[in-house]
Length: 491
View 1 (cartoon, rainbow, N blue to C red):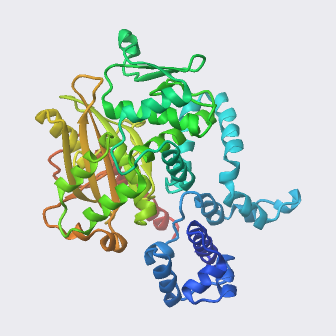
View 2 (view 1 turned 180 degrees about the vertical axis):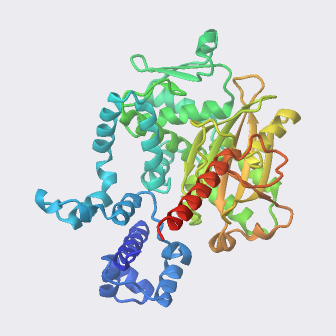
View 3 (view 1 turned 135 degrees about the vertical axis):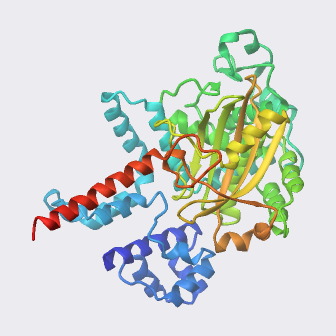
């Protein structure tokens, strides 16, 4: 690595951490005892601090030391790292176009403010290649979540304003009736609770909103938690004054990126209303302080809110990065049909660069040692309402994740189940935050990503041979032989 590149990467990371914590350079100077001018030079890539100075910044900013010095950038800065590392800016005659390299880096760094134009351009290109625009929209929103560590303060504050305006006590469990009254009295909704169930072709569609008459149609198969979430999303659209929206839940199709983004905003608002920030934070703090993992306490935390386990786990991805600075985490949702051998990854979020289980398109076989898949197998046999499990998953590269997982029955499909999981990268920072990490009762499991890429020997649950690893090994052997032949016939 070039020295200048390393300096610039560290400077970008420090600036991002500082701004995320709403600190000015003056504020960071007061906090750390380092001069404002020295910090400014670091952020501009002119100086690289010595280890003792990095240690001070790490402690004062509550960021792990290894995260500070790593050359891996957060996803919203990753494009800058890729451009700098590839040296492509040195090869393009930017001056011909009147562009300075520093200006271009600033443009890339501020890419989130121009995301709409960029996405629209990508979609226009994709149309010529017959790519689905919905896939681009969803991937773009996921990147937007990851770039913001999946926490949105303005939406959290909007929930508090809403609760105050409508005299909702967030310390009490929010019910569907609480929200239904507001929809009817304040926003003039008509709610028809048994209409959608009359149409078999609608499948698992849970709600349809008819904007012309403010009518919300529901299937009678939703439980109170699902109904509460649907009502909360409708309130979000109204309270946040969102007009460009989707009208079915789940969605059927997207017509614009704004609809996808607003659907995310409404879902976030709903989750934050039903599972309020302060309440879930207090419950997690109690769980994290115990020396052993208390399963009953965790399940009580889920049951404390009128929400599905999936909503609870998704809310964890908002709260853990912000409240506990646990940023290296992932969220997965799998579906499974009983007695089948196929697991489908339906939803994912990665706030960690190291965990990327994307194999659906290539039909690879996800590791059967994952607790996410084990929980699905268990619930399909036990017929319980909720199957919970926890394990430490260790990958071949040495990375370890604490993974918690819940499996539940799909209420709309017989013999179908789904699991939701949150995994947290185990490092020194996580050990400081979670007192129970040394609990001997938590099972340690060596895992891979897919069987095709897994080097674990004699795996009792392997589905197929490690074909991709074998191919890599064969190619490496060929390269070695070619090199030897080159040496032999060159001398």
